[in-house]
Length: 292
Image (cartoon, rainbow, N blue to C red; front, side):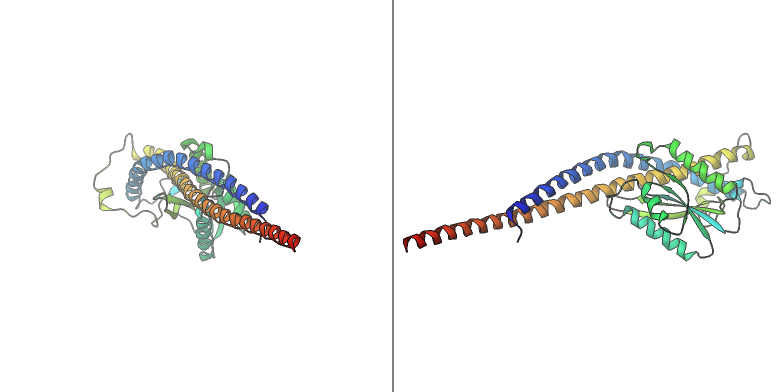
């Protein structure tokens, strides 16, 4: 049985850990409130611009010439997965769920050579240890979760596709649903005419669109805006999900530390009681020996 001094040292250590996890939970909760408001507010625009792109692609579906380089379909020999992970750990299964989905998808598509671009250190560290080529990494982005940052990522991805470095681009992130639940989403991003993503519906095509000055002149700006915002929305969803996962993980760690402190305190009291009882027995035994 451990001595009272050792148990007391462990209690102090667990108490300090609980203070840290409690503080991290409060920080994550504060960040989550802002991230949740932002991501919920941006979803309406994301849906509207997606509807617009659906209509544009439907209008050009029968065109002989590709209206934009990002519409070009190719035989998929090389594909890129843009992974939104986190820079830091202590956020539960947030990253491991992403990586499992990525590796499963790569293994299921044997004939395709996959490259990965990672947003976050955890994604970089994971794929470095696997037989997957890392194209680009964006690190320490916690203070720059904004449209300018995600636009830079989108430009890199669009350039790679337009230059022919990759034939298809996928985006992988955690979609925020609730504080407790995030859904892993893996969906094609480029080329834009992929039937896997877009299926024209009656609601999207109900109204005829008028383009000023013309559809050909408006199209490049809409395509650019659409791809950038899809990447931006993925970043916002991931950022909200990360803070939700971290808050839940730190809350669980704080409660576990409290339970451990209770068990250690009980063990400490028992050890102290045992030591006192032993001393009393020794005193009584000594007194009896003196009387004898």
